[in-house]
Length: 327
Image (cartoon, rainbow, N blue to C red; front, side):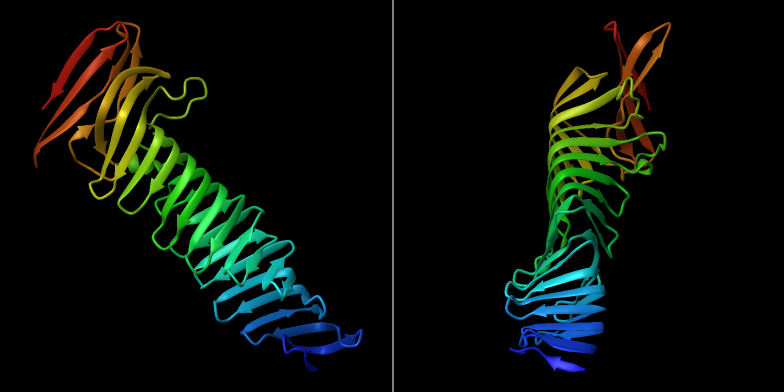
């Protein structure tokens, strides 16, 4: 049967339709397809429409198609509040937006007035560019392509893993702002798979030209629960200048076993993608029964295409210094 509800809000198609309570309650069973005047199509096994409250409930293998905005939602329990233009699901739900963004969530909400999709439950978001997000709660502005979330795990196209307390991200260009940052870099970027490079920071602002981290610290040392890490560099401000392929530090300390050893008002080194450039190399620490503990802080200088100089001062804990140079 075909039937249009009073007011032309919905058009029902089903093999079995019951009209009750003087036309104020429409129940469709054994498969139903519902269409609206604004190109919204909802399919399911069963539906119930309360005309007075303007509430539509659909149960069983529900698919919601928004043709105008290119949105598809799949769930077993969907409710549509016509007055508020709010579609919300109960339980596990999967949404696909513009064939580009894929959302796996629980209790998903779609506000058709503001074109915002959101949930307060744990959600994963993937896009066709290869980015993956896991969020405890999220909101996504579909028109502006702006994603917000809390307790975020982000994996980028370079396999770097970010953990943030909050994130505000523009998916048009992947600019983002976040708090309480922890990053695990891909080991292969640093030339030694034994390294476990990671970065901490209170705040991050990231765009295509540079990343800026406040109150940050960085190390490549392998994780060790007892003495972790043997060395790290902490700074009030760390800036990754992507076009120059350079990482800059301001008001920085080199810390050995959590003790500040050397202060740098400013210094920089090449980022992990650079194969050959002047700058500081990774510091190292060693220990022997003869010389004791020693810290080496090498500086690499490119002279020409086939010439270079490495200056490697060695600092001993007994305050002795050896200046070593290799040409």
